[in-house]
Image (cartoon, rainbow, N blue to C red; front, side, top):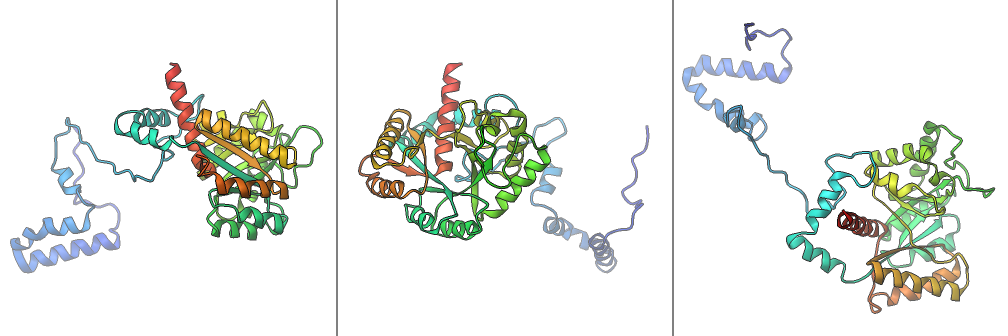
Length: 346
């Protein structure tokens, strides 16, 4: 049986702290004799991590040891221990939602959903100061999404962030057809390294961002091979992905959630037709979805007609029985709802 190497035999020179410790210990024993050793446990408790001495003197090898893990109440659902790539929802998220549906958590969840939640996102911001500042003047629960390429976008994004809004990056992505999504768009014809470099450029342009949504992107968001490296990178950066849903075949939500990225799709475009009547109709549609499903995400643009309508609607939202929430809160609520539906179907 090979002998265990003596702890006194050192092959490497001691580091400064270790050397100082042993020098102090030798001098203490030399001058104080065995009485100096009585203070050794106290000394060790001061220099070693808390609880280590107790753990070393604790249960035998065949016993189990449990360590309490403190979780902040405001950490939310999206602080996973493990991010797993695969179909459906990550296992940690399914477990968390299942727990939230039991006991006292169920009551809290029901209370939170008693009022229908409406998230409004204004994108295409950053190029025009008048339009952008009208969006910033809306209630802070309205989320603002800035194009990365206008020269003025960074400063307007700072203004929006200082006003309390949640900030998104409106990342240009390849559309079907000949529409120009703008410079540095993510393209299916580019390799993943180039697309990631373009994504990082876009993110670097908008200070204070929490998430992204796609500008155009009907082709890119439907291409699984092109999209996977993007959602992997967003997972590394802990950024949520709101799918603008510019194509019926979009893969964003499925892939993003599989890689641990918070994601959901918008439900309503408010101003595909830019007239007061058409915008009012779309706002009414958003209200209906919110009542039926508990949460809705609506995307609008900084047209004067849209800003006028939203100025009136947001001022009346609470009295009409709706709660304005940020994009990330709506994504959380939609994800919880989808996981519950998936669990009930099994």
